[in-house]
Image 1 (spheres, rainbow, N blue to C red):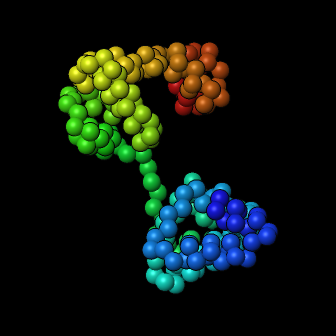
Image 2: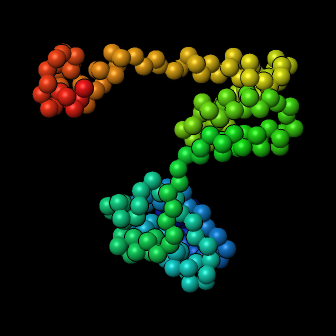
Length: 203
């Protein structure tokens, strides 16, 4: 955004870009999220390459996140692809239940909250997509506890979040329907005495 803003102002463009370069090539660490969004934007990619090279040559730290590997970003320049591939690439996955529990426990302790660990376990178990969702659920329970002047316990967490209501019961009919669809067989055949290889595999 900073680059686009400075490059669009034609009146002071040279001076603005000079300031931009000084700002971003004289830092100790740069953190860039969602780098895939620059693909296909030639000027932005050229500037990114210049900034990357300047920082790399000075031994500075560069941390970049993306929802894809560099080789899977089709309109990324070959130069940027090779530079990104030089680094250590790590896949970040959603935290497990124990880690999620520790995250919200630390939040509770940092905010001097009195809590029942079972309540935090309940939140950690039921909110597993990402940390934002987890913290949102935790904050919702905390706010309700404060407003109603109740203890942050398991009963309150269940009352506020109502996770059990969101759980769909899986019965044999659902399993049969999904299996038949996956293996591309008729559900009547699946439940019949037919012994064809395709049906047997599905069954």
